[in-house]
Amino acid sequence: MFFGISYLAFVCACNNKGKQQAGTADSIPKTDVIATTEDKPATAPAVFNVDAIPVSEKELGAFPFFTLPEGLEAMNKPVERKFDRLFFAIDGKMVPLEGRIWKSNISEIKQGEWSLPFFEKSYDEAIKAAGGVKIFDGSISKEEYDRYSPAASYLGEDGSIGYTEDQIKTYIIRRANGSNIYIQLSGTSAQGKLNILQQEGFKQTITLLKADEITKDLNEKGKAILYINFDTDKSTLKPEGNDAVAEITKALKATPGLKVAINGYTDNTGNDAHNLQLSKDRARAVLEALSSSGIDRSRLSSEGFGSAQPIADNGSEEGKAKNRRVELIKK
Image (cartoon, rainbow, N blue to C red; front, side):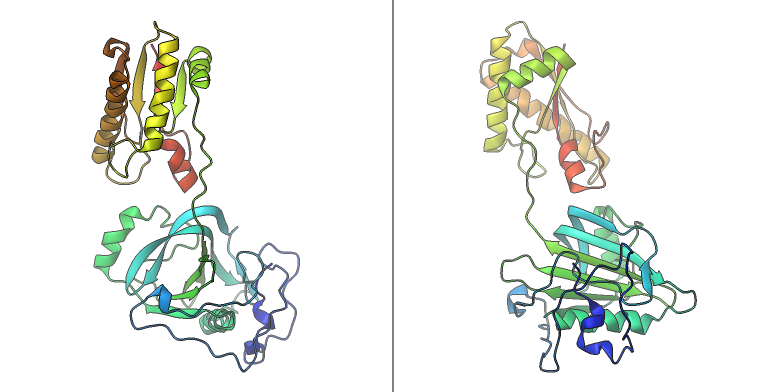
């Protein structure tokens, strides 16, 4: 359920006495939370500090918490992902935040009835009634755009905010459990854009292949895909990475005649040349670790392929995680 805009205190000012649209993907039933004239919106500190933002204890309902204002609709199907990274304008910088996201381009249902002030005021009052605080109102510089845009995977997708021409309004609803809600919107005389993110920690869904599973995959498929953890942007194995190497060692020792090629891959984040070298270094690190564990080097070879040959969509964090892999190929 969304936090229904038309039920808030600004309903009279917006002359929005009708019911929200029913039966559409963008018009979800509303909660019973009602703002009163006694609610006093908090103000943001001069320089953003999340600890200085008052915690909101308002009952908001289910993500993404807000309906669209009456008379407005998503131009296409909204983008919604359970976990991703999205950039929000804070203190003139585009700051990457992670969690559950919802975003869309917004337009009027009936042609000629779009109103930017109505769009902005609707969300401003609804968010503040939910205990939110505006933390940015402005645009970013070209220098800032040039700095952050290479890492922004989704610029160009519906709801994309963060261009130099965007006049951006960013809000936060701080929650006691740390699942803070960030909302940013931008609009022109023709349409608007809306982003909503609720901060959540990443939940790992990839499990460690055991030695018998590695052997089975090599025999049946000719290869085994492993997710070996390295330090960020380095080829140094983490403790979990060493656990994976230990399982590979068991599999190779159980089949003395088996030879394997170790192929390293990355996701598409960053420079291609850097990713290629990183994948080579990581594959080589696995080879060296196996050799140190007693596997004859003549049974091993290593190579890196960077972001080539992805096995999942690099457009999501889950996909990127699957592409950051090591493949053992049976020779």
